[in-house]
Length: 553
Image (cartoon, rainbow, N blue to C red; front, side, top):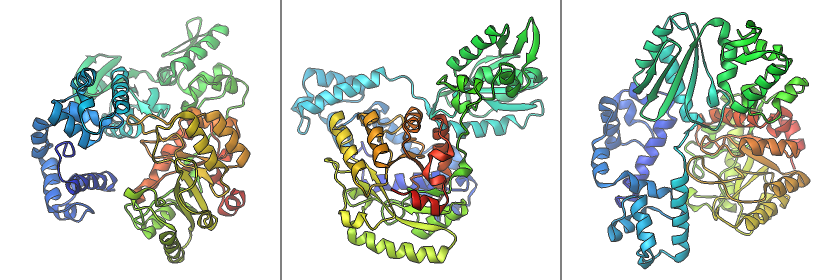
């Protein structure tokens, strides 16, 4: 809202930096003393006072004031391709645009075309963007945001002595990248006490239903929670049934019917007598198969694999030995090289690639050849000081519009690890984007393609390209594809991970860390890989350092 209000750029940046500081803080800011808040990086006296106001009242006067001047619909327009704060301000001031409906009317009347800087091509892009917004369903939560809600909810529920067991089900348990509703399974002999505990959760804004077997509430006027209470004998069957996916469960019920059994949320029955149901393993075993990890339950062949005893041994977080994508204060990172190295070592990693941005990404203060060589000296000195972790000289080099690299071949040849990434011209035609990425893959000095699809969950659609051709060339060249663990990227997505595995393309799981706490994000990359059937042997950075270096392209 500050941006749309034509506020000072530096003020906007200060708020963004402070927001990141709060998000990345390892301590609850609400529990910190006023003096400690003032010592947070990027938080000066003014922002510290505003944080204190938020903590005490839950509101910010500035936010209320801005809300009266800037409609939510106007801010929503920033999601449209080609519309930045300056153009949104112009639309508001010249044409009275205040939301998607008034923008559509202005576009259809031709009024937008009379404004300086609004070409016919941009008008068409805006109309298409509006059409996409109208067709877009209600936003699902990113997994990381749902996880925070679940942690808070479970801390509240577990305080009830009536609850014997508690587990998440649904898309959250399957670790999908976005989550709609939250499905909770509880075991209790006092279901009314469990329902009472749920509705007393402070974030509950609506109670849709409250009963012995099921209670439904809405949290923060946004997320629906369905809590179901079962007896201990039905716990496993309920987990299978409500974890889903629906197609997976239909497949299981079909197999049960074939064996003369009935499978529902209360158990697996033969002629009305329970055969299994107390735990999931027993349900799957009674159907003649091994237990299937929740991440695989999408009916993509996991049932057949379980029946044949051929399920993959999915990768675990502890399998990762190194992280191959990280940033420091040399470019847009928020911690020094040494701070990142120490955090990676504390996380148990054996090696870390320092991959700051190349010069093309000017807003990140990207490195040219001279500054990159200067960084190498610091890497060498830091490695000696920190000890017990190998720091690899790396770069995240921009893949230019024609597929060439943003830095000279000579400098790339001296690096230990090169990540090639697309950061601009993301809407290139599919055939041109395919050629662009393939040219980068064929570059002998590019070890991996970073966040290949360029998507941002709930914010930006993936770029268009021929993924099958990308996989074919990546395998041919021995170039790895990155599973980027940043919660708003999770790129590759699960189906792309599975396709890459089946194509025998090398994979790496990287945090893209910009802060010491970001190494914890590796878990989200592992979640994504597991949904794509990925095993430790499919991922290069599960190898010890010596073996990893020998396998490098």
